Amino acid sequence: MKPTILVTNDDGVTAPGIHALVDALKSLGNIVVVAPDRPMSAMGHAITIGDPLRLEAVDEFGDVEAFQCSGTPVDCVKLAVDKIIGKKPDLCVSGINHGSNSSINVIYSGTMSAAMEAAIEGIPAAGFSLLDYSFSGNMTVAKKYSRLIAEKILSEGIPDDVLLNVNIPALPESGIKGMRICRQAVAKWEEEFDERTDPRGRKYYWLTGKFENHDLGHDSDEWALANGFVSVVPVQFDFTAHKAIEFLKNKWHLHEQD
Amino acid sequence: MKPTILVTNDDGVTAPGIHALVDALKSLGNIVVVAPDRPMSAMGHAITIGDPLRLEAVDEFGDVEAFQCSGTPVDCVKLAVDKIIGKKPDLCVSGINHGSNSSINVIYSGTMSAAMEAAIEGIPAAGFSLLDYSFSGNMTVAKKYSRLIAEKILSEGIPDDVLLNVNIPALPESGIKGMRICRQAVAKWEEEFDERTDPRGRKYYWLTGKFENHDLGHDSDEWALANGFVSVVPVQFDFTAHKAIEFLKNKWHLHEQD
Image (cartoon, rainbow over all chains, first blue to last red; front, side, top):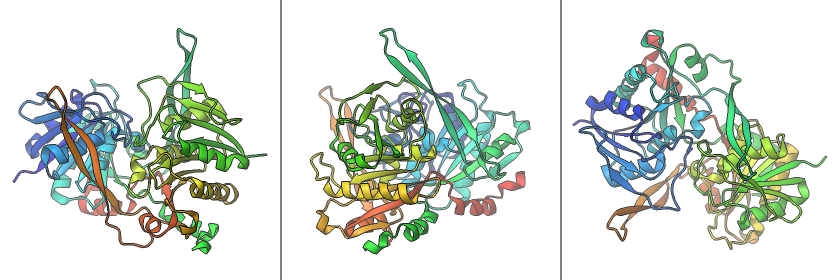
């Protein structure tokens, strides 16, 4: 039987990236698209608890069943599994995002939050991002590697409780050296707020920032991307800093109070 | 010199929990409050990139300097550091949340996202949550342990790139056995959508769910909380599943393509 593949994203059903992803994976299985009805970038792992959710069938992907949802990317995955597919799909893919989700961006990313939610629910999952913020960016290379990864997951499997964060350099195919399994680079955004005054004399702020990579290792996703590789980072949702447990037990002496 | 302590939350400046936290820590240092101007629960690590942000001084905390912000909890931390305090505070605390952020809830939590953002920026940080969803819940025990943890962080420090997820049982002080350093339990929400029909005949869905703890270990936060302990989980923002790297390298043979 053909596998069932849930496709979602954080840019909405009209974004070129999700159309490229559907196109790339179409012959691999039965595709169902459930994606936000408007852009939801940088939504982190937000869910909608104070408002009801809407679902609407859309005719955006030819003969592929597709829905738009009023919620976040995480809501899309939850609704897709519970109300549309009615069972766990064999694979959930998110993207192709227009812009990088490498290193610390995994935390802010709506694309990756959808894949993470799928993994929490026990569904093999991956998020794909092209290092080009433009909606007119060339998707050829991103499509090729998204398909390769999806095939690998379906044929080889991935470890339990792990999802993949896949980033693709904005290079022509001839410039790509291959794929690399990496760790998340130690990098962060240095915030800068653009302070302005509105016509009524009140201040407002636009969030901007400079991306700073402090990581010199050759095993990080930032290194791979800067050197022409597609980066593949296995991601987990156990956020425990296991190494810190002993430190805190020994240094804080909390357990005296047991 | 007295330490500078940034206080934030995801329930807004009027929530009893943040007032309890300010009250508990007031004598420890110079407090600055920057919190959302409306409830922002379950916002995950969302940031605001498509809209400008507003900041407004509020007179909610007596002689403690306080601001409300139109953005998410993560936005509050970014704005506080860059535009209000102008430097890294010595400590950032978030909460006291009305309701648990134990185990998998750390991922969805606005409270914890604020603390995580602070940690990313190199600020010692902790999030506090009381296992009582009611705004009228008794904060006495939560205040006591929030202060103890804040004192420990200021005096002993915590490892780099680690923040603390502190959950407090809804018990009278006599029922609390002490604090325990734990790992995040393996638990998740089993979604159930409440499907309804609006007066115009269109379907809508409320997200509900059942919390399921599958973890039998005595070293998890769920175990600690169920047994009368305050749970303290060290949390990291390196999401790499390091153990999966070798598996993928060996099984997927991607590096052949290097």
